[in-house]
Figure 1: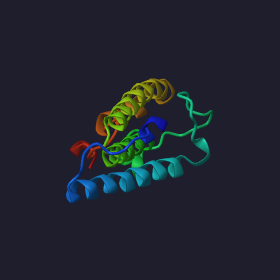
Figure 2 (figure 1 turned 90 degrees about the horizontal axis):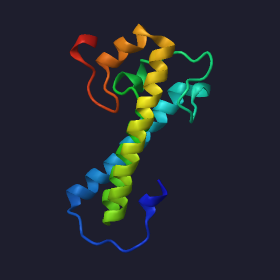
Figure 3 (figure 1 turned 45 degrees about the vertical axis):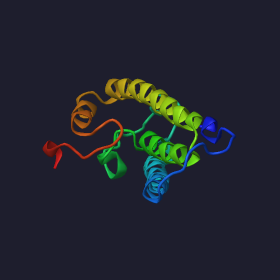
Length: 138
């Protein structure tokens, strides 16, 4: 995350619509990540193993993403990297996305072990990072 703030002057200019879109990504990503954390409450953890007694979340932001906190962070980081107008923050945003994708996979294996078919059904209808719910779930 810190590499998104790589020092240096911008290297290119951005058209106003791109600037507005990037700002929107920061805001919407921040909201998604915050809502994901809020939904977890005291069950939020930086570790891949779900907390003892945690329940499977499938509502709220977890209806559009199995990992709304990670999705929000990636979306916001992408917006910030674009606004920085330097290659290093763009590389950092891509690296963050890769790391969170790997971490999400490890967490999902633990969730499968803990919740079995209930998690598998949820995973079939809900994207890992972000998207629309599967028509089967509507």
